[in-house]
Amino acid sequence: MSGSALFETFARAPLAFDHGEGTWLVTDKGERYLDFAGGIAVNSLGHSHPHLVAALTEQAGKLWHVSNLYEIPQQRRLGERLADATFADKVFFTNSGAEALECAIKTARRYQFVKGHPERFRVITFEGAFHGRTLATIAAGGQYKYLEGFGPKVEGFDQVGFDDIDAAEKAITSETAAILIEPVQGEGGIRPVPTQSLKRLRQLCDQHGLLLIFDEVQCGIGRTGKLFAHEWTGVTPDIMAIAKGIGGGFPMGACLATDEAAVGMTAGVHGTTFGGNPLAMAVGNAVLDVVLEDGFLEDVQRKALLLKQGLAGVADEFPDVIEGIRGTGLMLGLKCVMPNTKVNMALRDQHFLAVPAGDNVIRLLPPLTVTDAEISEALDRIRAGAKGLADAIAAAAAK
Ligand SMILES: Cc1ncc(COP(=O)(O)O)c(C=O)c1O
Image 1 (tube, helix red, strand yellow):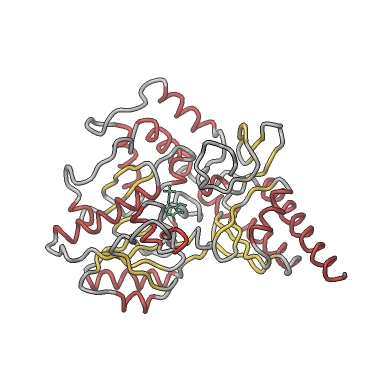
Image 2: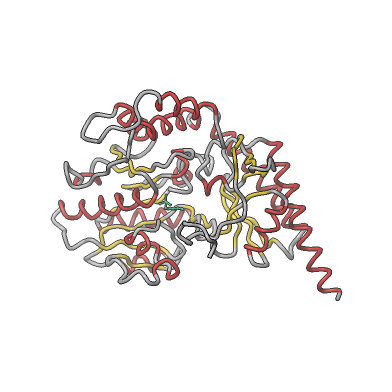
C-alpha cells in the first residue's frame, strides 16, 4: 500500500516532475532528467513546445468545449488535414488510443454488417500486440496478464504468432471481418513487421473481403521518420487508429478510414462526448503544423540514424548488458541481457528516462525535436549506465 488515495494500478517511480523544457524534465527539487521516454511516445514535440503552448492557451481563452451536436471548425480542419496526408477519407476523433481502436473495430464490423455479412465480426490479431485496456482491446491484445480476472474475454478475437502470416491465413473463417496489426509493435518490444508480411496481409484482406486495420497509436505521427510507419512499406490499410503523438501531450486519438470502410458509420451508430473538442483540435492542428513542415521528417530520419549508430556502438562495448538494437526511426529498443527493469533503473540513476517493453527490451522514444547534442548526451548516459552494470557483473564474477 502506498498510502495514497489512488488506485494501485501503476508501479510508479519515486519521481515527480515540476516542469518540462523540450527533451528535459525537471523535478520539484530542480534535478534535470533527459527524457527519452516521452510519456511513452506522447510528447512528440517535447515539453512546452512554444507553438503548442500558444495554440492551447489561445483556444483556452476562447472556447473549451462544445458538443459534437454542433459544427466544430477546428475538428473539420484537422480531419481534412489528416485525410489529405493519408490513405483516409474520413476521421472520427477520440480521447485515447484504446477508444480509437474501439472505433476501428466497430467500423470494420459495421462495414461487414451493411455489406450483408453480419456473421463477419471476428478480428485476427498478433502475439505481442497491445491495443489498449478496454474490455475489447485487451481481448484484441490477447495478453493473459491484462485479461486475467476481468471475466470472460470479449468474443471475436483470434490471435496468431507475431509475423506468422501463414497462420493468419489459416485463421481466416467465414466469420472473419478484419485483420488488426501494429506495423511496428511498441509494447511488444519494438518489433517492426517486415514489409513483405504487410503486403501479404493486404492481399489476404483483398482476396477474402476483409478490412486491414493498422494500429499506429505508438508508431505514427513522425515517430519512424514518415508521418505514418506504413508509408515505408507502400501498403495502405482500410482503417487506422492513431493517438499519442497527434496530441503532443493533450489526450486525443482518431480513427481514420476510407469512404468505403466507413460506409456503416452513419448518424447515431457511434459517438463521444469529449472526442474532437476544440482544445484537443487546436493542439492536434498545431502538432501537424510542425510535423508537416518542409524537412522536419527528413531531419527525424537523420537524427534516428545518428542515435541508432551510437547505440550500436554502446551495445558492442557492453555485450553483457545490451544484446542488440532494434527498431526504426526514433522508436528504438535496447534488447537487454539482464532484466530490462534493472537496466532501466541504472539509466534512471544517470538521470535518463526510458520505458521498459515486452521481450526484455528498453524503449527509447525521444521527442521528434531532440537535438544532435541531446542524442550525444543520451549516448553518454546510456554508456555510463551500461558501464556501471558491466562493472558490477565483472566484480561479481571475480569474487
Ligand atoms: C499500439 C498501441 N495501441 C493502443 C494503445 C492504447 O492507447 P491508450 O493508452 O491511449 O488508450 C497503446 C498505448 O500504449 C499503444 O501503444
